[in-house]
Image (cartoon, rainbow, N blue to C red; front, side):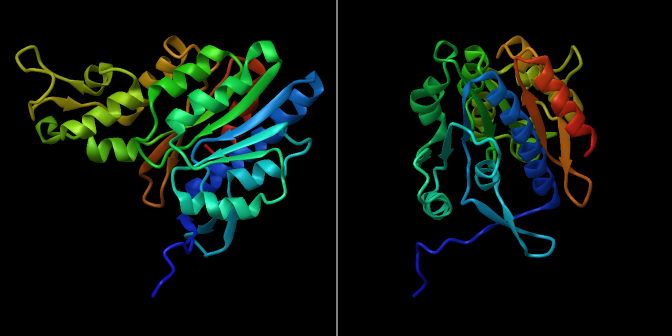
Length: 276
């Protein structure tokens, strides 16, 4: 009988390998800057996984975001790794064993970030944070993103899962979209303005629920979300996201970065250029 607790490594494509490289490079630059300024700075991964992945291309093991972060020098003051999947947290616990500044949470990140983790990155406590929001799909609430922006102390990398969105919400025939799927996107986006942004219609047609409405392209939706990060969440420096594409050249997700600091945006734009 198979062991129900046995952990199987997630298989990832080249686009995810690139994402991990981008985050690793920025985390290294970020750590040097924060240490030089005397901040106590923390690393947060809201969908941490089990610590390692397996390459779809050749089967080799690849260090995930938590393991990469623990290798950064100078080290972060604290590490907070969250995953709702208990087997992933159990696997990660073995990779971080013996490190007393690592905190693991087998909980829903939408709750634990707001209640337990973000309060540890307050401006008045001279703390800062780098937060990785890399959901497996539409599993993130806008309130988390907005709070990170309002705190003014947190830089974020954010996975905008456009393939999941297109498959389940932004259908060409809007009448076929299930209500619970639309509600998932509303929670991620923050309100229902995505409906007007994602579709065009003639004056004679209703905007939603008519198969003759015209679906907008991914780039229009992605730019609208970038503007929300600035105007609604309150991040002041948000470069254009990098589209992460699979082997068929289809965009799987957009990788966003958002910060309050111009220097942070310049660093990320330089890193993004290497992979565009």
